[in-house]
Image (cartoon, rainbow, N blue to C red; front, side, top):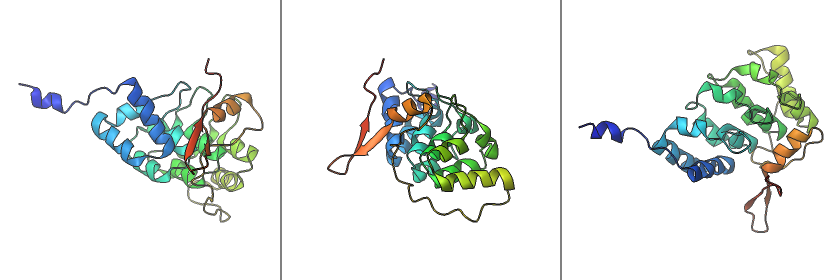
Length: 206
């Protein structure tokens, strides 16, 4: 008795599995994420954090994986939109910092999102998503976000165009603010000679 009911309860993922699934989110591995959610449930993914407090939305948004984001947004709890890591940055901060306009739009416009309220959230360096975009000269993102602030939910600036950096992985240096610079350094990626994505971990993990 009760065996059928117990089969419906997902087992708890091991620590290594949580680390791996965050890597899958970082690399945009949709099938791996779908398999994890099927086995453990969406809450296990929503609760996953790295040592800097970053969740799956940080990884997906910071690296411009729109297909994976579109899969996750209907499933994740609404609180994930405003989740801040140890540097106070949200997924919107990371998407704005790296110029991923389609990601920025999806995070703001999704029905479960707090919407334009996300733009007001400041990280520990005192930057909003607009500030991050302006600092890194992500002009299309900055214009669109400012347009949201000025025009409201029913309008969109005509100057917006498709983000050409949509698939560019995290790999920018902050020009101001040690917290942001350290955060981006942790997730810096580059292409090796074979065209494969490499992750550069920080030299000092203490």
